[in-house]
Image (cartoon, rainbow, N blue to C red):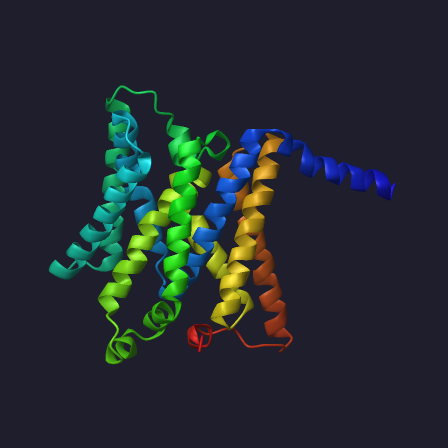
Length: 295
């Protein structure tokens, strides 16, 4: 009986690997999971979930225009993602409109523009692939783009890790010791725009925000050290991406949706574990100060 169960599990995991498109999907999904998880730790500490939502939706017009003119979608996505960040910052600094309102105005406006472009420009664009991802249909150029951008983003974030954590914890102190909070903020926002490009292939525009927030939030519940937070976030994200891709293959379901469902279940499990530990007095709830202590 155990042999049959083990054989069934072995087949469940190995059968999809006979297909090249599944191998490519697992590669891109894993790159997406690692990149989003690393950035999500800072987004969680900074409370930038709305900003992640804004950038992920604001890139739609750029993606549509890139497909129409035959340019790499990453170019259009980065231009509109960076433009959205600049518009939000400009509105916030030059008017009485608060940041959350500016975010809502900009991302809904640009997202609506993307929908209008899809409806009026004759093309073969599949709206579902843009909104919900198409990781099972990635091309060689998509794979290369995702890997290059992912390596760049993760390398820069880890290299500037201490400065960025200090900025997230205490921007005033960061400025006092010679760091530029504005430059560090720009670095994170640039990384956010690039990470959205990576995640578009795997989960699409609508579900990108889950990949950008849930891994960091899950890890934040389980540890009070930033290094451990990074490791847990990456681990949970990669497991969700791989298992979600397998589930989508066997169930013939949306890959992006399956990945986010697994990620959400992991968060719920972490929440339950953190609640039990707290009620049992095993540990105190992690604070931003504790998580930010990397020295």
